[in-house]
Image (cartoon, rainbow, N blue to C red; front, side, top):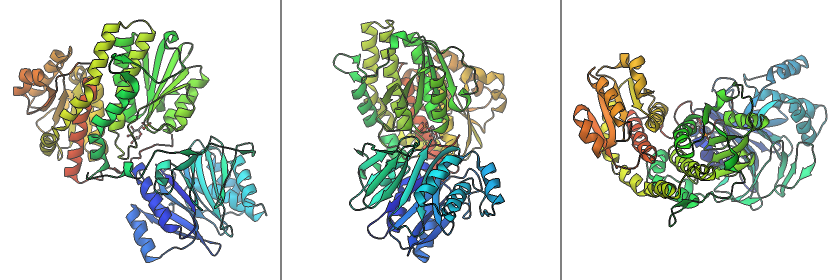
Length: 607
Ligand code: G6P
């Protein structure tokens, strides 16, 4: 999704802006641009497509200046072309915007009625128009910003520069994240701390409704009442090294390979390995009083929730509702007394999940979030937070964030079960022991990389792929199909294995590979029957199972992937890895843009 960078620099600002934009690329975008002040005048360079296009333009038409703003745009209102690319500008002001201005139609009509003309199809241009008109009426940049903020509705983060003001960069946030970076003699603004990793590690996260005046000397932060406020400047641990690709061809592959290590980090933060007990960081929520759990997330995070539903029901004996965030608000949720809302999100900023969280809070749920970005909005707005410790995830398709979400949710399920008095000491030790094995088992699974690459040759040029599974393996089938769709653009669907015969089986022929996720657990025999239904109709089955499952069924499969034999409890964590690798290799063979797939965004900050 869109990214913002702004800088008040000591020297040339353009290289800083371009470097910041490169760090925001991972969020997904379709055009980019920068604006600077040269002798007090606003100058812009914008280009459709990847940053290399903008680099080439600037190479051809260099841009000086010591203050500037930059943007990567993921189109919402208005097609992704150069005209609609940010920054937008008039002779008086230039700005970049993340999010959506919901009342842009009436504001546009109002501005047009006073003779303001529009050049783009974007909602952003009304913000520009308002600031421009206020400046024209003689207001200062600060007054114009304050007045504009009173008029706009929706979710946004903004970066604004003003002609004639070489030492003033204004930022504002409502619903979308924005941070201020404190450098040596230079100051920064960005939509996420990662963008600033090579400039500074001193970061201030603006709060909801804040706006800020940034100059070379520092930052003056105002809360939404206009009052000046002090916000904490933290030293962030996000460093340059952590977000390099290392020797890997893609961030996604690097992140897949990091899983044994980050799962280990996560386990260490949640369990006592010697006593084999769960020991969650302090969350001030009394789980013994929880009557029902309501899990909400989007995309991969939602699928982590689907796996966890089985765990909460079976281990903690807790009734669970689960919703995708974008639909949750359309449900009527009567009495929420004793209901724990569990919000799962890598970024902690996904607009639908954040809106669902606020809705749930209004309806009386206690809010617990599981996020990978500790300073995120969801973390700050929850009663309790669990951090997944996956480290920065750059590939748009989520991998290590998913498996660390699973480990964290497994820990939570055990903790809740204990608090509810439904889990004996012995059973707890058995579950914790199974989890402790996961890092080494995950490393074993990575040894299948080459075999999965060969297997990918069988699927990368087909039109459709089906994934089936039962129980937690159904959730992994869904995640596998999502991974393949996201990065290889192959149409993939997942079905609960038992549901196949109610329709999807009509799709089966020798051109449709069917990936069967079937560890030899209590549901294996039933999934095996569904697999046979596919085989007898000429379907090409790729069976992912353990040695027991493969010796029982392998001869009927077109191909097999033999995974470690582990307890059914932790199997979904391990089975996530081969479906990630299969999708990755299929995408490599197709030559797609793996880390930034078309049309997708890492953190979706619009509803
Ligand atoms: C986007 C990303 C997905 C992610 C989903 C939810 O669609 O491309 O990889 O699963 O958002 O994001 P979240 O940050 O809330 O987990």
